[in-house]
Structure formats: C-alpha cells, structure tokens
Amino acid sequence: MKKKLRILVMVLFLMPLTVFAKDEGISNYFIEATVLPNGDLHVKELFVLEGEFSGYERIINYKNLDVPTFTDDVKSFEGSDIYNGSDIELIKIKAIEVDQNVNFDYLSKDGDEFVEAASASNGIYGQYVVTKTSENKSYKIYNPSTADKRGFYIEYIIKNLAVLHNDVAEIYWNIFSGEQQEFIENLEMIVNIPNNQEEVSVWGHGVLNGETEILNKSKLLFKVNDLSDETAIDIRFIFDKSVIFESTKVSNVDALEKILVVEQKRADEANEIREWAKKVEKRIKILSIIFDTLKVFWIGGLLYILYTTYHKHDKEYQTTFKTKYFRDFPADYGPYCVGYLMNKKIGPKEFSATILDLIERKHIKYEKIKKKEYQLLKNTEKPKDKLTKSENKVMQILFETIGKNGKVTIREINKYAKKHYQSFLNEYEDWKDLALIEAEKQNFYEEKGEVQLKIGIYIVLGLVFIIFTFPYSFKWYISILSFLLGVVSLIYIINIKKRTKQGQEQYVRWIGLKRFINDFGKFEARDLPQIHLWEKYLVYAAVFGIAKKLAKNMEVRFKEMPTSEYTVGDFVFDVAYIRMINNINYSISHGVTNAVSTAMSTKAISETKPSSGGGFGGGFSGGGGFGGGGGGGGRF
Image 1: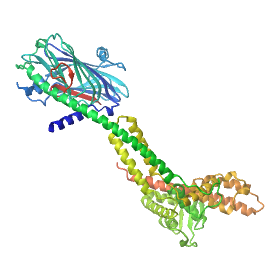
Image 2: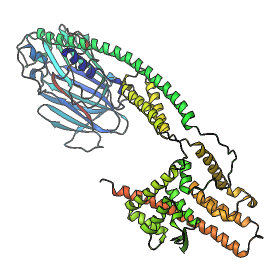
Image 3: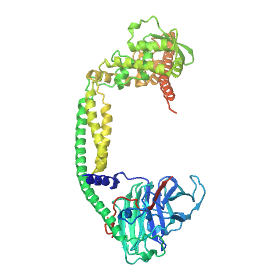
Image 4: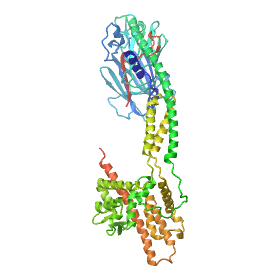
C-alpha cells in the first residue's frame, strides 16, 4: 500500500501539467556536449529566452555537495562525490540572433561576444559578471529585452568530470538542479563521444516524459519537452575506457554490473509509474467526460432557472397607464420615495431634492447674500409634526449640526463636510436609513431575497465545481462557457428588483412625468400647467437629474406666455423667481453632492496606509539530481 501511495505521489509530481502553459520562459534550449580525452566535458549551450528581462544568470555547478563519499558498493553508483567535476573553464559568452526557425544548427552561428566586467547595471548590453563558490560558477549575462526573443550562447568546460572504472568509462552529469528558474518548452542535447567503438549505454533521470536515444556508438540524443522550473534532470552514459585515455580520475572498481543494477531498478520503478500514469490518465479522461457532462446539465438547469426567474420574479407587471406623458404628480411622495421607486436606492441627489421640497413647502426660506450664494433659513412658523422623520433629520442636519441660529449657507455645508467628514457621513447615513424605511413602507418592490439566495447557491456551487475541475476539462470551452455564464447569471440574480403591481403603476406614471419634464420645452405655452406648480416640477426634476434643463425651458416658455393675464410686477417677479429657484437648485444639488463626495474622499484619504534498464535509450527514470554538477539559472 505504501509503495502504491509513493508511486501515485510521483505520478502527480512528475507528470507534465500542460494545462497551465507558461507565456514566458525558454522556448528552446540546445546543448552540445563533447567528451575530451582527459575526462573533461566540453559544453556549448544556446537557449532562447522570451519576454521582458535585463539578462540571464546561468549557474553551472561542477560539484554536488549533497551526495555521499564514493565507496565500491552499489549504493555509491546511485550518486556520490566521484561524479563531481573539479572546476569550470569558461570559453566564451555571446548573443546569437534567433528567429522562429531556430534549431540545433544555430549553435555554430556567429554573434556578439560578451566581455567580463567586475560589475554591471541593468540595461547594459554585452557584459557578464562572474561569481564563484566552492561548488559552482555563476555567470550574470546582460542581454536586455522588453518583449523580444534573445539567444544566449555560453561555452565552457567542466574539468575532470568523467570517471575511469576498471571495465568502462562513465559520466554522470546533472544538467540542471533545482536552481533552474525558467520553464523550458523544448530541450535537446547531443553528446559526442569521439572514437568510441564498442561500449555505449545511456540513461536519463528526473522526468518521465524525457527520451534518450543512441544515434550511433559515438553520438547520443537527449530530449525533454515542457520541463518545469526547479526540476532536476541528469544524464548518465558509459563508453569505452580508451576515449578518456588521458584521464587521471580512476575508481579501481568493476562498475558496469553495479551501474546496470542501479539503472534497472530505476527503470522498473519508472515503468511502474508510467503504467500507473496510464491508468490515472484513463481515469482522468473518464472523469473529464463526466465533469463536462455535468457542466452541460448545469448550464441547462441554469438556463431554465433564468427563464423562469425572469418571467416570475423580474418581468414587470402590465399597467393600466399606456400614454407617454403624465402632466400631474402621480402621488404625494417625497423626492426620496420617488428616487427609491426609480432605482431602489437613495443618494445625495435625493437629499438635495428633499431640501428643495422643504423650500417649496415653505419649511425652509432662503435669501441671497452674494452672487449665486444663498443662505437657508429655518421657518419656525411651520410645525415640525407636519414633517416625516427623514425630513426632520434634514432640518436637524442643516440648522443644528451644521448651521447656527436657524441659518446655514451652502458653503458652510461643504466646509463642514470636509472638516468633520465622519460626523457628516454619520448624519447623512442616518438620514438615508430613515428615508429607506419610509420608502420601503410604500411597498414598491416585491421581496425576492429567498429566491435570490437559493439561485445564488446553485450558481456559486456550480462555479466552485467548474473552477476545481477546470484542469480536467475534456472540452475546455465547456468550462469557459459555463464559468462566464455563471458569473453573468450571478450578477443578474443579485440585481433582480421587481416592482409590485402598485409599484409598477406608480413607476410608469412617474416615468411619464419625467418625460413631460424632459420635453417641457417642446410644449406650447397654452399646454403647460399653471405657473404656481412649476417650482414643484423643479423639485422632482432634481430627482430625475434634469433640473437645469427644465429651468432653462421654463424661463423661455414663461416669456412666451400671454401677458394680458399678468401685471408688469407679476411678470418681473415670476421671471426673477424662476432664476432664483434655478440658482438655489444648482447650489444645493451641487453643494450637497460635493459635500457627500468630499466627506467620502476625505475619509478614504485619512484611512490610507502608508526508462530502459539496460541503457539502450528510451524513456527517463525518476529522481534526477544525483550525479555531479548541475545548476540552472533565471532571468533578472
């Protein structure tokens, strides 16, 4: 059981996850390695880095300090210090121009050769900085790019890497260790073994999707696709002793049989993992089909729910009012009630319109103190009990919280909102709460909370299912479609607001009044209501957001009305009155709205915080990183 569990874990970690492909990384990595007679390994690398970067740091390990000391037992051939090199000799670093057709032959292309520097800054081109430790050398290569492809070429020799056994010669080399920080889409390596004529075997370790191939006695091929970052991979190969006749690193051990034992064990484990992987892949495919089928059923269910929800809980009722305009006031609702009827919310616009309404009803008087600056005065002759709680709250905010002695100016409202923003917002929110309570009592909207909750749960559960099963989608577009439909549907359900029959009857009439006010300037003077009603129209025009337009149209239409019914004094008084109301409306609407937004923005600012067992080529075995050397690198 423990063995199966271990294999399953290895399957999950070693299988390439191609679902989440990376946009940036190394698209191609080409390596040519040649065994030299003295046991050194001559390496040429060309890799293509994509994206935005200042350069690339290539870390080349010539020692693996994590492995044990070599002895002559089988365990030592799983990885030991005999496989370490002794140093790195850099030959050259250069930039090679690459294109979409880049291949192995580009290793031999000319390019700009870089020079060593003691230090360099980002943005510099053509330099590299070397850092040395007891186990590696790091080459920081300055070759910047904003969004282009760059070809990095590095040529070096790993000293004294090969081992001379009694029966065969061997190299066990960590190509990359966990220090490799870039995803590699395609890795190809050719190993040249000059003058090798008899013995040759090769193994690769680290990932299960890699391949090794013996092209001939003196040439090996090593390939990996979609190599994840921080993944260790290595290559081990044996060859004729005569190839490294100048080597001085000897083990004095008959190694071939022990190497074969180690590699056969690894190959058996890798093949077992592959079999498990095939079974897992088959099961995942079946699950993917099941998951996608469930998503299709979920989509069908959601579409049915949306259809029935619209007709039962969103589609508005038919009304008895069918005409375009409504010239009178449909009901005696305050501005905040009308605002709630229109949009199911109350805000600064309704607050300022309530002040205008109180002026129109003579609870508030006004006087001009400067050009376009008015002082509001509390009319003490009007009884408070004639006002609603929210209207009394407006009076209290204006004349007790902000003003003094029953007087307040628009400028004082703005000043208070900025200086005492928290107090002003608290008062404003208290008024809004009172206004909402009064508006909700009018029974304008049906209660849909329970319906929205049930449908919302259905959608959210579906979205969670889609997100968690997305990596296993057999048809990815089903998951994308399901997710987008779910998000849009959730937004729709949250915003459902259906008016009651009474609410809809009122709504269409108030919309008719809005159309009438908006088209006020299109009517002939004889078709307009009596002048004493015009001020009240301005109150509700403020709620509809068209007060300025209405005031201009009123002034034009008033001048066109017959003068025979008015005295000269009445005419002058009424024109001045319209202009005054327009100025007051503008001052209050903009003043109160600015006061609320100023208070909110001031509050926000104040709260800001600064496998083949015999070695004849084939698939890789698991568990890379036990040979000598290694390293990796990443962009900077």
